[in-house]
Each structure stands twice: as structure tokens, then as C-alpha cells.
Image 1 (cartoon, rainbow, N blue to C red):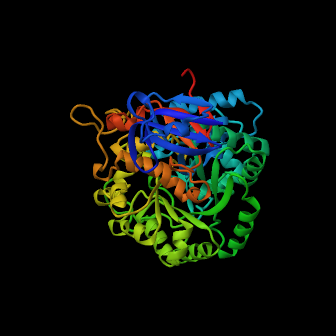
Image 2 (image 1 turned 120 degrees about the vertical axis):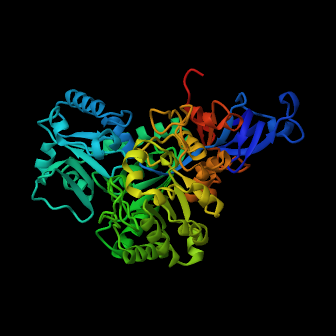
Image 3 (image 1 turned 45 degrees about the horizontal axis):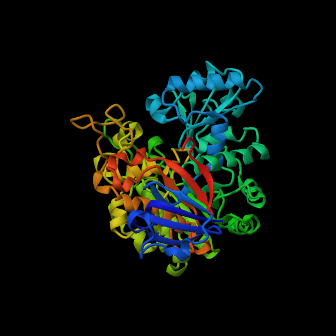
Length: 566
């Protein structure tokens, strides 16, 4: 079927080409792109009458923006789908709302042996640590396990602690921490590796539920204009079941409509002997739209609970240095060996690095690999919250992409209450240095880390350009003299064109889509993976970027999502 999309403002994946464009699609590909002439007719620079002949369908976009489909370079859609199907706290904000939602979910599911779900935000609780007592009040008889939004911690009730045998005698694991009261008794919050003390007891998720979660997550991503992604953990981790079989089955059946790269989980309790197993998994799993060609290494934790790896200690609330510098889950030597072995085996390496020490350890590991293979593999570091200025230029020099989650680069409660006081003034200025990375020649790719935060690319792009969140006002964070939101390190903002490119051609590149099907751009021969917005953000004030909404999402020239009532 041949489709003509006309009267479009066009972002082609790399640059904004303005209004008045038309794009011809046929057999799942972009056939031609041109600028319409006067009165909407096809002019000399347009498609011409021959290209327009035999068109089956004409869609007038009314001046709205047409762009390549967004590609999320770091996301967990099965986990996001499961949370939407379970006790979903991600759209709530307060302790009272969370407790009420848990009570309602438990009442609606009286036969469920565990209460599962998650998505709570740390700022809703003093010190970011909820208590078992709150859960005990509404679910005293069954264990409750609720990961927080970043999945680096979990909220559990007393029954869950009892099932896991956790009491004041239980030592902290090497890669985590049990939150305790002054007497040493566990209070109900588990950090990092301590979550596995409970999660190992969870009932397994059925194959049917895993598939339903993937399809739920896929539909949600399509509704937001996301046409492809990289699943940042394909393997069993912290209460998450291995999604390998789910992806393989969905790819074989055709239920997987999006092109997906799976980042196989690196078991930090083992060493390079696991590379052979990962190679075997890559060969067995890859097929159709699923490609198990990346490996995920989590090098450190997160700043909010003091587990991100810092070069110098965290501060206490009085500004004094503590004895905590966070966790490097792999030693520098172990990380170098892992990266070298994976690079040699032909894997892309995808590293979670939040703190400045974690970032530097990862860059040091890539420095030991062959430049020719680095360019081929397209390695990347994700999150990059605190980056020492001396390391910014190393991304381009080492051919390592910066995988940014731009939504976090604003002065929200988590930043103001749980991060800034513990980093100190100097390190606080090193956070999310997107502008410096871009100016230093680093390749930017973008993702959401959903269900840690919303998978809506337009909300992330809004923050990348403004350095404050859409809808933010003086009640959500610091306010200016007229009540306007305060930009967080505005010198690190990106242009709208650069931010859109990171979320389209940049992330398509990290997934090797340019080589497979040309996706990520609107150009002749490229896969017709597209998104249509309800307006042109390039023609509106930057403060309104986040107000844009997706009208339709296209994969291989077919609509996979259509806005209702339009």
C-alpha cells in the first residue's frame, strides 16, 4: 500500500526541515521526501507527479510534526508492563496515596499470595525510606514487595521480612544495605543487593503474565511514539524474572512489532567465564525483530540512597564528609576484564554508571579495547549523573556513546532533598552535563529507564532543552521571582534539534538500525517507522515542548497507534 503524508512539518532525524513537506511510503519504506510548492501543490523541489501517481491513501497532517519514531535506548518494558498490571504506584505521589492504593489492591486480590507492583518515589518518605509498619496496617497477613521507581530499593512489610528471615541479626550484603532503626531492627526498606534477600522468595511470574506484560509495555510505548528500544536488562535481577523466553516467543509469533535489542544481564557474582554462555544465548535468542547483541553491566547504584560510586565521600546533612563512597559492583580490574572479553566476543557493552567514579572506571575499561572494534560495537554508558569534567572529553575520544535519561536533569524533590545536600556544591555542578558532552563531540543517545520514570520522550526532550520539567511550578521545586520554574544548570541544556536527534537517529544508531533497515531518519530507503505529533514544537516556545502529544505511530508504514477522537 502506498501512502502519501502531506502538509507536514518535518524533522528528518538529524535536522529540522520546516513546514510544508510530504513523504511517500510504500512497502514499509520511505520512498520519497519533498517540499510542497505553492498552495500545497507538488513543486519542483517536491515529489513530482510521477512519485504521487498511484497513491492509495493521502493523509493530511495539518502542519503537525512528522519525525522518525522515537527509539528508547534504555528501558524495561516488561517490568513496566507488569507494574501496570499489578499494584501500580507510579502515577501517585504521597505516602497516603501509596498506602491507600496497596490496601485497595490487596482487597481486590484476596487470593494473591504476595502483593507485588511498585513505582513509589523516595521523596514521599522521610529520608526516602518507607516503613514496614505502614504496609502492616493494610496488609498484615501476606508478604508485600514493592520496588521503588528506580528499582534500586524495595519497600516490604513485616511478613516479607519474616519469610526472608531478615531480623536485626542479618548482616548487610556486600552489594546492598538493610535500612534499620536505632536499635538495629530492619524498618522495611531494602537497598540494592539487599532486595534479593526477599525477591528470591517471590512466586515466579508465569509465561502468560510475562507475555501480557511485554504486550502491555509495547502498547504503552507505541502510544508515546516509541517504535523501537533497547531492553536494558534481559536476565534475572532483583526480583525481575528473565525475559529472554518472552522476547523469543513474541518475535517468533509476530507479537513483537518493534525492533528490539536485548542487553543480556552480566552476573556480577561471576567473571569472564560467563561470556561463552552469553554468546550461546545470543545465538539462540536472536531472530526476527529481537537481537540479543548487547550486554548490560551495572557498575554502581544511585545517588539518592548513597550507592552511586563517587571518587570522594558523600556528605552528611551538615555538609561533613562521611566514610561512604558508594558501591562499585565490579572492581576496576574485573570491569576491564569483562569489557575486554565482551568486546572480543562481538558484544556491545551497555554500562550503568551514575557516580563520577563509576563513570571513570567504565571509561578506563573501554580505553583498553581496540579502537576499531569499539567503533563497530557502539558501546555506551547510561545515566551519567555525576561526570568529572576531566572525563567529559573522553567519550568522543574513546568512541563511547553517552546514553542520557534527560528527564532527571531538573530540580525536582528527589534532586533537592535527596541528592544536592549529599554531593556538595562542586559535584552538584557536574550533574547531567549533556551540553558539555555534546560540545566535546560525544555521540548522544537517549532513553527513559521506564518504569523508573515516564517513557514519554517528549517529557524528556522538554527537560533536555529547558532543564526544568513540563508542568513544574513553584510547588514542585525552586521558583523564580514570578513563580516560574528554575532551570537546573541551564548551561547544560541542548537545542531542540539535538535532543530530538538523540531520541531518534542517535538511539537508532546505538541499536544498529541504520545498518539493518535505515530506521532513525526520514529519507528514501529508510524503514517507515514514524511518529506524528499534534503540533510542531520547533515553531512554538520551548516552554511548550512537553505539551505536545502523539497523534499516530507508524511501524513499517502501518499505523500501530492512533490517537482517539481525532
